Length: 342
Image (cartoon, rainbow, N blue to C red):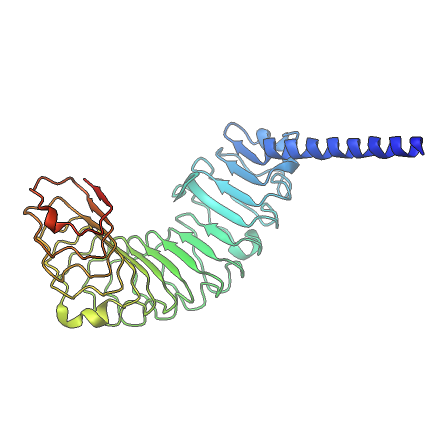
């Protein structure tokens, strides 16, 4: 019995030590950064533990189909890499594939090789960022793709994006939108788009919309009916009271104007807004300009003092983006405000 107990304890310790060893090796080697030579990956003694690989050298993926180890889930090609990719080079365990300039994003605009998406990118990929020369066409993207960043300015046909896609960032797209081409996207970012929007261009599923260059009039019924967050970086057109109900859906909770400096008439902005950013708005707000629902408000440096009753009683946080050099009457600040940033 003592002998059985001894071997039981001994085996448990051996197994425990082995588990701890593998756990240590995994933590030490789960991320491999290649910045000198592909030999760093090719002859890495613990490459099979890697789940994230970053390649920042301009050398071919040789031996093809064997260099990137099976088990890799995140694969990034930084700006130094500019070699062809063949079918089988990317293992079927990869779920995130990015051609990026840095670890935090920004597409690799230097990667010049086109490849057949359907044969090169495994169907396991759910997150994808493509280089500037890579075209996409219907039924070629991975069927389970949920997030896509693309650089190429090309016409988008219906069926190009899989129904699974919920987040799309297009950095250079500036074409007329075909209604229905954006599928069921929830989070849509169009950095360079500046074509007039028509009703039906944007998907009704969209809840988060970023327009980096858009400076066209906002017509009625353009914005999706369930939109929650809208960022307009370069928008400068006047807002008309007459079309406000149809212009801004009453689902919007966050509205971000970066360049807008037209007078906002009372009751134009919807009463659903809780976060309002008016970064360049240099007009004194009047009663009713800021909805009573707003709890967080950002204003630029104002050219005249605030008036009593302008800020809503719902407000809790007030930020003056570029400082504040006007006299402040305590009566202008609602008692609900708990934080002021100058």
